[in-house]
Length: 104
Image (cartoon, rainbow, N blue to C red):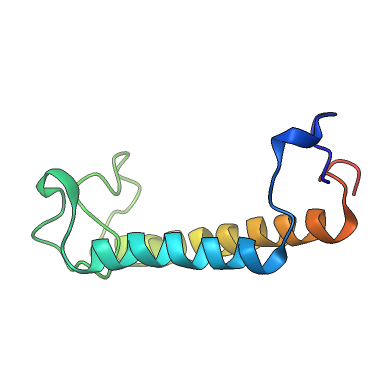
């Protein structure tokens, strides 16, 4: 099995297809819940449910105008998607090589 931190019992994902299936199901469920208006506590009810935002999106006031704010929102989406894809790459690499990320 995989050996993270010297302990093989920490990681149980030994199948790339199982890891992919779990990722797709969990992220799909969360995104479907959000897209259908299931936002907890009424947060962001007045906004488009398919786009990031809310009154807390830019708490430091980095966006001076609406165009800059729109650009920051797109960058946030792209960075989040890239992070999810890269984490999947780490999982696949660890499953294929049988070693943790530091050893690779």
